[in-house]
Image 1 (tube, rainbow, N blue to C red):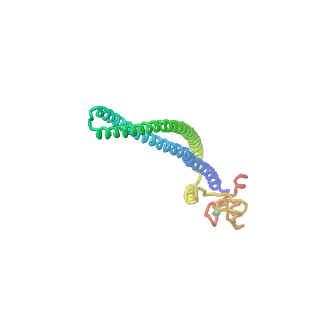
Image 2 (image 1 turned 120 degrees about the vertical axis):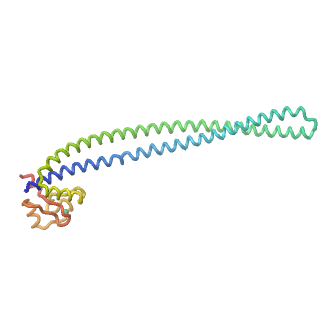
Image 3 (image 1 turned 90 degrees about the vertical axis):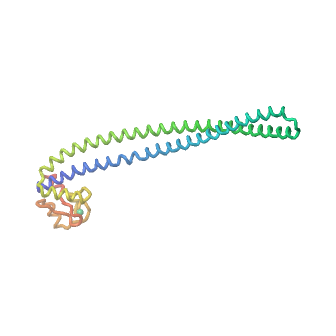
Length: 239
Ligand SMILES: [Zn+2]
């Protein structure tokens, strides 16, 4: 088998190993995505829960201010009671006092109810914060794992690349650039072994004449269908 064919087959193995590792690296961010989404989802829940609590507190504080203002009014009405001489005015004032008291009672009830709900909401917020912490931990564990895997892959790629460069040096320039161009156009696969009587790249059945030429290994033979360079693995292993 031609030396160039042998070297290109070797080069292809190394390039495919590098490609495989590059693909794995590219997959890593996708693996992190669901963990990031979960953290974001719980963060959103937390923002909503805090927003609701703030709303409740705001309403309750408003109610408290209203109540305080009416308490002042009530005291004013009550002191006026002693000064009113007119019966009708007295009755009207008494009615006003009763109405204000009623309003204040309703306010107090509402404030108490709100405080209870606020407490429940605060509990919920604590629970959500706990869940968030858990999910953030999971995410950072996954990120750490991905970082380590990336490091390992990078080390492997560096190692394989060194061998690859050595092998590439031995290939004649013409076949090498033909190989590089084919690799770009054929999804990284430029030279493929015969698989029985088929092309190892596109799996098309090949004519016997072509197969025997490939097996002889004395020249570059390409698949008629996918145009990839063909070689015979057994010849490669025998020599
Ligand atoms: Zn083919």
